[in-house]
Image (cartoon, rainbow, N blue to C red; front, side, top):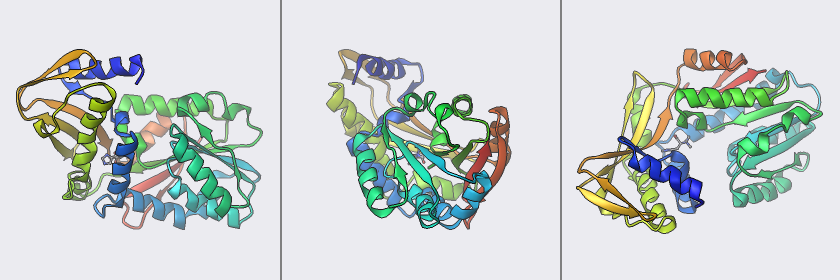
Length: 311
Ligand code: AVJ
């Protein structure tokens, strides 16, 4: 990890209320555990979104109003399995589309490109590796064709409200008039359903959180003892927030990147926000960021929305 990253982590672990950014979950081991999360029956988000994209691809594309060729630009594409549904539809329709998956993982982007080149002969692929803020910078404005931006998987839920709005404004700034954004957001619902998706009975989400300590031991020369920490998360149905934490089980001192971090017994490290939205909140954000809300596409249980916004 570079020195900025190390400082960022040290800053979080030295704060009066300790925290670690959820972006650090996704090393190779963490990404593999996240795959296991997506396969748990309790983690309904992935299937719900896949159902929407598989069954309503035609309506989604129609609502963009795009008549000719366009770009499908996916931020944080991962393995692109959900987007396949959308692309498969476009491929069958012989629509002229260029798919631009952007991801920081070169392995993910390469794998996806090879796979899609085989399965989607009519789709032009133009994959990009990198931080999506950097890759996006100025790109869409110089495109000849309109773009549909995809920000799927409830990734927006990891951002505190102010940051979520900043991100949406940044998307807006980069888009051309008439470009579209399809935003995947998890909806507020029976709190028990949401709680089970994160406080899962298999302990997989617990492993996902504890993997942060393994990662820091490996990459930051730290000496966390995993048995000295536990995982805790809760859903607050009033705020729509799932918050995840690691708890220190004893008074202890941990070395990390040549510094010493002290933990009190029962002290928390906040690791993740997974925000669940209401429609008024989503629409409020859209309008504040400068978008027009076209339509919400829901799964059959109304658990999740893919919301289409136009600049
Ligand atoms: C990938 C950020 C959408 O918050 O639901 C899953 C990550 N964390 N279980 C989410 C996650 C715990 C996930 N996102």
